[in-house]
Amino acid sequence: MQTSKDPLHGITLEMMVTQLAESYGWAELGYQIRINCFISNPSVQSSLKFLRKTPWARAKVEEFYKYSLLEGKLKQH
Image 1 (tube, rainbow, N blue to C red):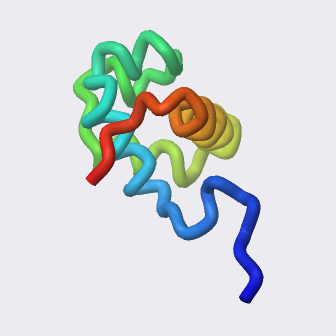
Image 2 (image 1 turned 180 degrees about the vertical axis):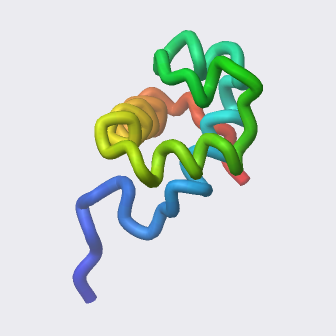
């Protein structure tokens, strides 16, 4: 059996945003990743809508998620 070395393997964008919001809170998330969907009236659904159509923003979220995983800063479910 071959396992993926990609830390994002099997993680949906919704799982990422939800876990980041639970671990950091929206205010800190908006500070760490300067994207308006995290700053102005943030919610998981509005963030997903924006991130799905904005590749550069999604890439920032994915990078921050990987960093948070490495640093052990994410709350585990």
